[in-house]
Image 1: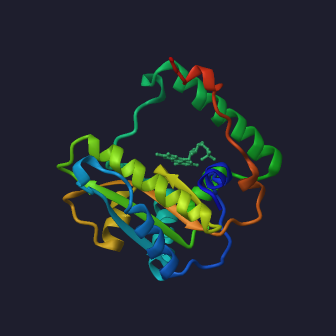
Image 2: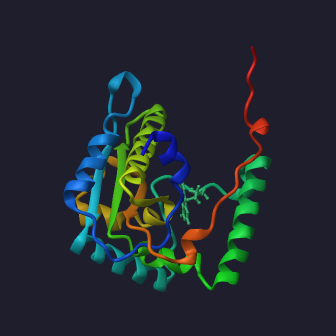
Image 3: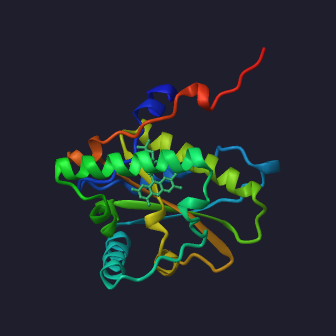
Length: 215
Ligand SMILES: Cc1cc2nc3c(=O)[nH]c(=O)nc-3n(C[C@H](O)[C@H](O)[C@H](O)COP(=O)(O)O)c2cc1C
C-alpha cells in the first residue's frame, strides 16, 4: 500500500476483533516509527507496548476505575472546551453530536467501548521525558503518526486515545514507566472488528478554511 492509500484508509477504530497481533509485528511498527524526524535528532520518545496478559490486566483495571467513577487525571491536563478557539469548538461540537446520533441509530455506545479499552489486543503507550521542551511533543506526534500509518499499511486498525491514558498510573505500574517520563498518549492497535462502531467517519473542514498558499 502506498503512503497515500494508508492516509486515506486510516480512521479511528473503536472495536477490535479477538485476533492477536504478534510481538514481531508490534516491534516492526516501533522500528518504523523510530524513523521519524526530531529536533536535532534528539529522539525524545519511548514506546511501551502492552499485549496478552498485561493488556487484559489493564482492561480489567480500567473497567474497575470507570465503574467506581474515578476522576481522570492524565499527565497532560484536559482543557475545557469553552477555552478552545471558536472553530475548534464548532468542529468538536459537530463531531460529538453527529457521532452520538450515529451511535444511537446503530445501537453502539462509544463511552462503553472505552471502558474496556476497545477490546484492543495491544496498546502502545508513548512517553517523553518530563524535562522535555514543547518541541518534543511535536516530535512525538510525528512518531505516533508514523506508527499509525505503518499499522494501517499492515492491515491493522488503530486509535490514538486520551481514554487510554486518563489513569496514567495503570500503564505506569503495568509496564514500569518511570516517574521521570510524561505519558502523552496511548494508541490501541489490532484487527478491526466487524461492528457499526467502526463504520462512523469524521468530517474535515473545507480545505480553503485551513490552507493559505501564495505564489
Ligand atoms: C490526542 C488524541 C486523543 C484522542 N482521544 C480520544 C478519546 O479519548 N476517545 C475517542 O473516542 N477518540 C479519541 N481520539 C480520536 C479522535 O476522536 C479522532 O481522531 C477524530 O475524531 C478524527 O476521526 P478519525 O481518527 O476517524 O479520522 C483522539 C485522537 C487524538 C489525536
